[in-house]
Image (cartoon, rainbow, N blue to C red):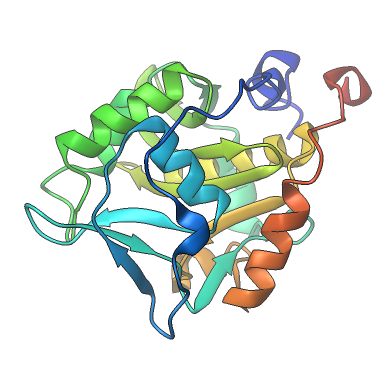
Length: 236
């Protein structure tokens, strides 16, 4: 996807990241149980979120008052060398334009639209992840058709990990285009682990696979051992 792999887009996933913000919560002592739900409580402060992702956890609200932290027993990832692009999707890709980090909050709001079934992204999450984005810890890939936002995906980037959170579309193949573009950009930027939390048939059609929690945590540890080394010059 040469029209996506511009230096500007790749650099968005290569921006240096500062020292982790402080948090009062210690995820080192959280026991990994035989259930996807690991803990309840804490907060959505930047330091808390980053430490959670570093330990393989991510948050989702359980109700209006409770915050759950999840680490699926069976984890979904997309190997960046095994992304599947169908013939029909290949034909449709070039009708869209793809941008990076131009309207992060709009993507989150679209992902959390009340019109979507099982929506869980509330204003608290939008505010928390927008703050992460402004601090360089979160990215969005946005898909436009005739200058209208029709699809997108967002997630958290920590070193060589990208943890995909949610995606949306209002036009056929727009979310697939966002994911395929994201995968290409992650690979070009030197990211080695693309986490999608749980697999769905939709994600499996694009190359997602299931692995055990232990396997995911080993990959996560490797992804955090060293910073991204590749430079955009090697891709253009």
